[in-house]
Structures are given as C-alpha cells and as structure tokens.
Length: 62
Image (cartoon, rainbow, N blue to C red; front, side, top):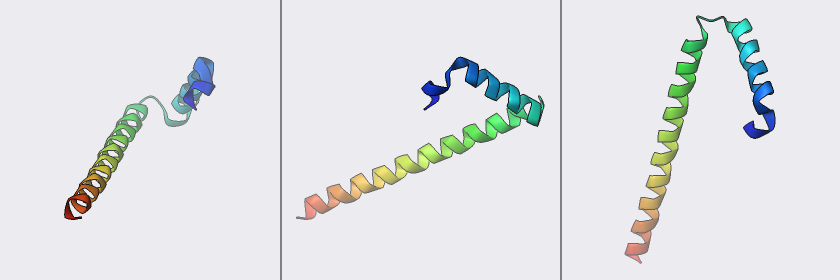
C-alpha cells in the first residue's frame, strides 16, 4: 500500500503532519508509534509461538 503513495505523496503527508502537530510534537508522536508497533510485533510473535507450542504438544500426545 505504501508503494502506491510514492515520494511526492509521502512528502505531502509529512508536511501536513508538521503543520498540524508542530515540530516539537512530531518526535514524540513518532516515538510513541514506534513503541506501539514494537509491542504489537512482540505480542503477535508470542501468540504465534504459543500456537506452535500447543500444536507440537498435541502431535506428541497422539
């Protein structure tokens, strides 16, 4: 989906975000989004690992 935006569209989005939030808030917002994505990835990784563990336990019990 991001590849459909292109460089000019990405620059436009960044300029609009700069105007709306201001230069002091953008680093805080970026940091918060990064932490959120990191937590989301870790949670999904943990869930998939639990599913893999459960399925391997079921196979070994059969």
